Length: 484
View 1 (tube, one colour):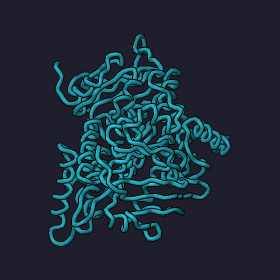
View 2 (cartoon, helix red, strand yellow):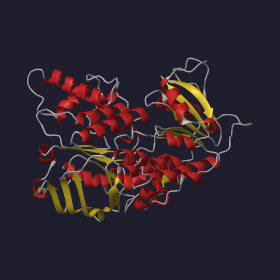
View 3 (cartoon, rainbow, N blue to C red):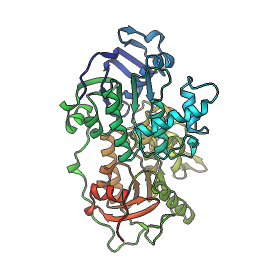
View 4 (spheres, rainbow, N blue to C red):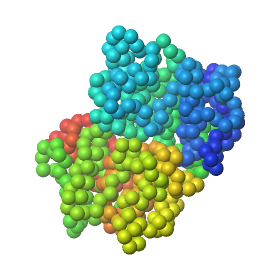
């Protein structure tokens, strides 16, 4: 790991409140020059709030923010942060969807100007993408809205490392791999170590413990708005990190053992992928959890949409937990409670009208069950952290009476404790006869599935029970043609 030199930025007693909610409380933390600092904690622990203060998009209420030896809190903002070489890639993407990749690059780099600016922007963003994500297949003229979420995440990251006559000392990466498959995520993490190796600094926020332990020099653990532990990464283990986070997560050994439900049962779903060249179908039986694996963007999400449309057309109740919550998930102008209960309004009526007491009771029940961190379920959905928004989308699907739940990589940005609690809820609901089809970019989540289909180029290329699952098989089928 890199030898630490001096503090690039330092928080001393930083605090931030939103009304009655104390988001940050007396935070002391420094980021050293030439290190990757990991920041971890449960959803709502204050990680993103702290980084928004560092990026200049939020102002701390108290305490000091030192850049070098200078306290800049009173005059700090995005422009000051950028002047000091500090940039941030937030979990919620900030790209303008109607503009091209090159045009989005120009928006964040005003030094790209004058005659031929578009050609210069193209060259810069393509060079950044090539360096971080070799083989990315993204064109500078691509319109952002037409890119899948994983490639949008790649553009957002690459754009943060574009510089034109500017300093670039520190980049904050907030859940940067949440939409990336394992191959692309590994490319990014390798680049992070190269960037740190030449003296740059990274703050990495991730709920994937292996990424933190393998990539970071130090890890700071946050809980309830405070930094409760900071150690060298190699002084932590998976279990000690979970313990520091205060999570009640269960170990993998405590996972429920699934029994094959394919014997003597008729599938509730038998869907042939739209680009499938042979007769292979994706089958899901009552009470079964079916996993969809493979590299991101290879037809898994499209299969879920096919199943959803077919279910709606046939009158079957089905619910979708969207992975891209900004575009397909939350109703941004509604409350948390309204976002959860929207799929269940038909069962919350008293006469011709919605019973507000029943609606509130349902929202509070699922707040407790999913651990949604908010003082009031009537607050706007966007008042929640990204991970808590995702919990609300899960609650919406599970609170409905749908017997088929479709999940489009739904655990993005959710902390490990909550993940395992949700896994347990999924297993409980499956045991009651509900069927789940689950696309995930996290290989370890396939261990919770009964049956797995691996996708490549829009087709299901491997069909195997969980008992035959291996990471080597998944990766080989994701990249190579298999013998007939």
